Length: 285
Image (cartoon, rainbow, N blue to C red; front, side, top):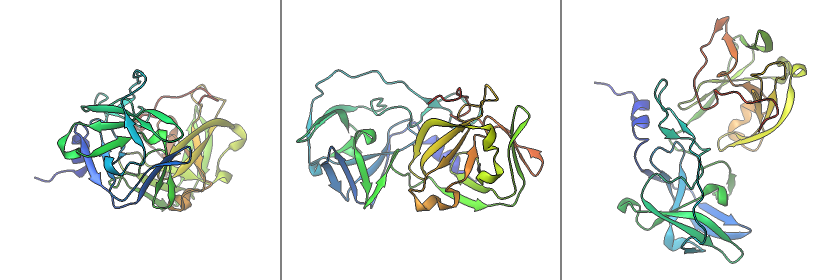
């Protein structure tokens, strides 16, 4: 019997997973290098959707110490890995301090600073000799390139394809974009995104938002809101130009099809259910 590959990937979310990477990985804080290694592993703690780096403890250029401060509570941001199922997996908004496997939290001590609970030593014997580092606590390089958000997942793919199909985007009956020159972005386990030239977007009806987010595959996103609707907060975004991998969408604008009515060649598309389905008020971060 054939197996759908996405079900295999989704079925592994409850497990502790790892994969070696051939990249040179460096982390620093306050100008002090914490690790420089070509022996890093990518680790997904149980229920985590995105990976984080584990590095050989013997290659650390900083000290590890028992935590000096008590652990803070960490809010879970859980999502369903399959549509229609209850939330089970933790998305990237869930901070490092929410550990879902047994292990020991540690402070990272450099010459210039102590980073509280920024390391985690899993108890799993397959990860013996490795410590996991809090991505948000450090500045990171893969080879000689900056990475942001979280490490790139080798099993996660972003494909961009030009399309001449007619794409219409509306909210509360008001057309906000209409194009036949979209770039379609296909990303593993996520809905297709329609990136539209600004000339085909009713930017006169929209307001720039202070909201910023980062994606390790596409860069930093700036947002727009549509104040004409209570559902219009932060509904559209555009990425900066830091990653040549995403050059086809630089300067283009996409909308959350979870919250708007998107028609393709006159056919209204179903609204997907994702962590971004819930609206935010205009101007909200």
